Length: 154
Image (cartoon, rainbow, N blue to C red):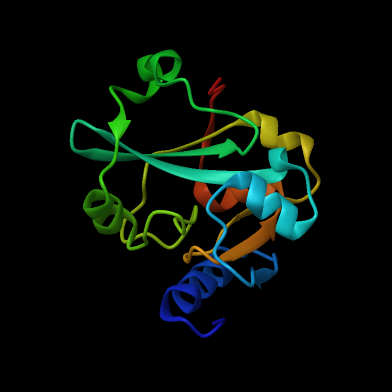
């Protein structure tokens, strides 16, 4: 599985951005932050969910703690109007499928916002381009690699 094309593409993007994290392929696809945390032996809050939204036809990426839900009404003054992105929109914008959207490796740079709650964790885990793959990083490294802007999401 580690040689899956989407994981290889992600690994190249991670290296290009100077990321030092470890890519882990979990035995089964984990569809929630809670399942990923359980598989990794970490707190659910240390899981960085990559949520892609559609803002009037433009993609917006929100990296949020698995312990939080995004309050779109709260953040829309900063991000613009947000609605749930459809699977085809996600695939076109990121080159990845829902459940495996990583913070990196997209065809173009996406406006990206990050939940500062993730700063509380020494190690943060995020998707690595495939629903069964994750990678370790730090909050500061994730911000540096993505150019994300801090935004309280809850």
